[in-house]
Amino acid sequence: MTIELRAFQPGDEPALRAVFASAIHGTARRDYSQLQVDTWASRDYDAQAWALRMQGLVPFVALMDGRIVGYADVQPNGYIDHFYVAADAGKQGVGGLLMRRLLARAAELQLAELTSHVSLTAQPFFAHHGFEIVEQRVFDVRGVEMRNAAMRKQL
Image 1: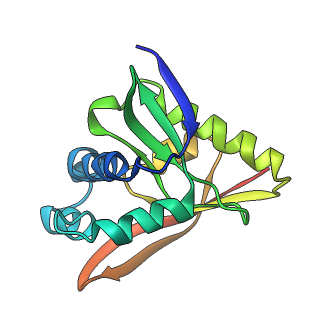
Image 2: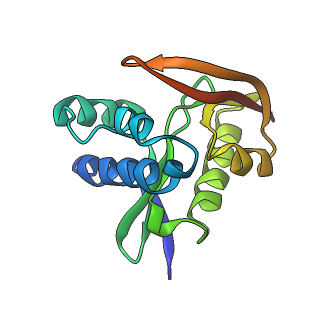
């Protein structure tokens, strides 16, 4: 299968939402309860608010045989806000390709470090790419306790 990366394009928003939901309900489900994944990636969401969020993040988009299967962003301050790969595209190189693109973008921006709040599921992947845990976090999402880690990579 061929994996390609491209810049976000208007109209990608529904496919990115599908990737987000797949990553959480399909992959992160092994580390989070049903209530947690349902709260994190509710099937009832505001499509317009989602579209505005994606337009603001301007992520890189991964396609496998022409289908959007992943996306990730890095903000000018070095924060990775979203990094998701569809469950059926996991372990096929999509995440690695996205991470290499984020690292290249960080170099273009001359960033000293990258930071992110990383799910339990994604922590081993981020650690494999040189990120370290700064702090394990517990926080509330609409009344549901969630866990993740603040991670960073010095560049």
